[in-house]
Image 1: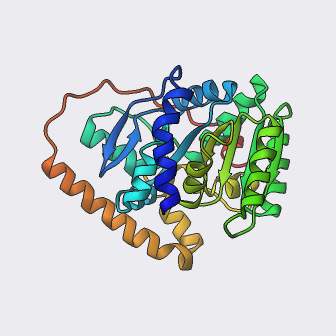
Image 2: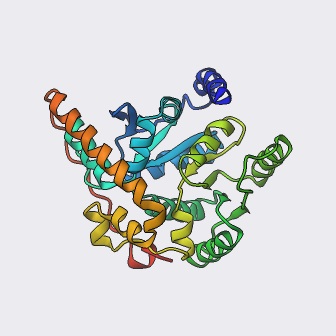
Length: 293
């Protein structure tokens, strides 16, 4: 991971230059990972501010799996803590912020809803987007659904990269293609943590906000179904996904969910009393048509 440490050293110098005028939501620590205390509306506003100016920034969505993985990997944790926005994409993460920091969050920032809201605002404000990741079939369906829902949305480009590390020539061609497209927001659907590493390595090279959305491409393309709303609200979306893909996901959820509960219990036992923050307003549920294209 020598390239990661080199990139992080460069960021210490560059970050102060690029986003000094932008305001990002405050962060609170969860098991060493700094998670943004924010709502979907606040996140959208912050992202659009940077996107209009083509400021190179990183937004990462962190459910339980992301928080636990980053907390146990020093290099990944260090990278994650440099990102401008690390949203609580998971009810248990929101609950932990409220329990440990009295954050007063009324809802999580669900990745699928965040991407939908960003696309709606991007269409209204004329901010082009770029789609990077997943398969060609998923990208084709995703673009069809996005254009049907948001006719004015400018999709500046879509690219399905190979399932390997890019060569230096391929990497430079990708950066040039994204920058030449004029996109203000680049959605990364490479899976966690690959997409976060990509965003870190390309920070200050890609002149746009990189939003790491993971499996959201599959949901909005119609290739995978989201959990029912009641399961999402109860923090059981992981169970719905496990039922759909038990062989691929059983180990992830068995390990990370158990570790999350253990870390939270230890943190609660050692946490000092903190004054309670005023509750934040809950984001309104998206219309049924927005939950699933």
